[in-house]
Image 1 (cartoon, rainbow, N blue to C red):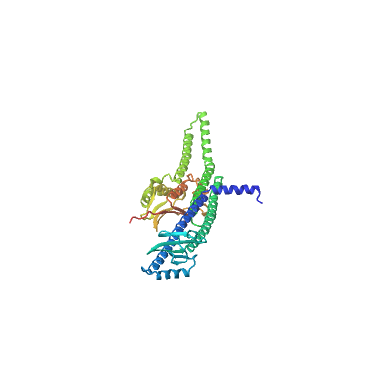
Image 2 (image 1 turned 60 degrees about the horizontal axis):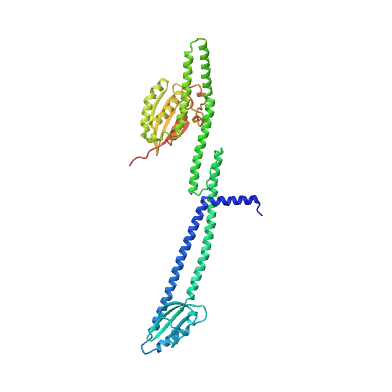
Length: 460
């Protein structure tokens, strides 16, 4: 016995299934399939019935013509013999033959010429046989020839019964298969709904299971999972930014507060506080610049700059970078050069690409000692353009290379150098906006930053 709780759950499940789109689609297509099957079966049955009728009529016509051909005016002997021979080989239940009061196996009533479908009782015989009858005139006589229609009726009955069984099987299959497919599809949709419900309650790592069928639901699931992956990264990034802001900006804000307190105290003592105010303004500008950089990174990650994309030759951007930073590197006691160049047209934003490469070069200049060699190169590799910025400085430890792309993250040895820890975060954001892959590697010695851009297809 099913408990009341189980019955309620089963009833709710059935009600939910009936309201589901897969179930309604399955029922709709099942009904359409059954209707089409019944309609086509009715057409086949009707055509078979007409065909059997035509065959019987043709047989009657041929038999009637054969019998009539034996008649000669004034000589009925051959006609009577032929008719009696036909009648002797068949009982009245198989066929009827009659020549007015002269021959045959039954006494035919007076019937006008024509072709009829009659029963045994219609012609004065016992039983329930059905006949196809042709009545014609031969000289002064009336000739009646009839064939039993029961064989054709039996064939039609067998066809009809077979069709009824086939229809029952089709209906059962359509209903059962439709419910089965609807339950499967609904189960997959329920998994999607459950996953989205888990995500809405904070389980950002929840993902929709992939069946592996490669169907449209798998395609949708893959796309949703990709969106959830991006959402998870974005939320985790926001959490990290919040934590980094709370941690890294606390010191400059406290420093700004102390400077302002000192300026207030000096002002009360009639002291010159202009130097303190300048320091406070500079500190405020640095904090403001940090927030502006964070906002810029967020805008880039949201794709707000893609409307400015156009065909850009990265090699032309390298020329601009070289002109600006070759003297800056020399002033820092370093050398800067472009080692390799190649025409490489990509789809992108010139200003952002310039800023990205400039950030990489500035990082090398700011974090490397005098005597460092900084090299910029561009080469083509199949359908990609590989941009590399290398230096012979201290490099970045392998365990830190993934972390340096986080906002406001600075490795310990770089905390004494100017900067906010947002340069590489901005570089990664710009690279991802251009569908490029960025990687850090050991230059032995120093650091190698490689960015692989997809090239635009060349016009034929």
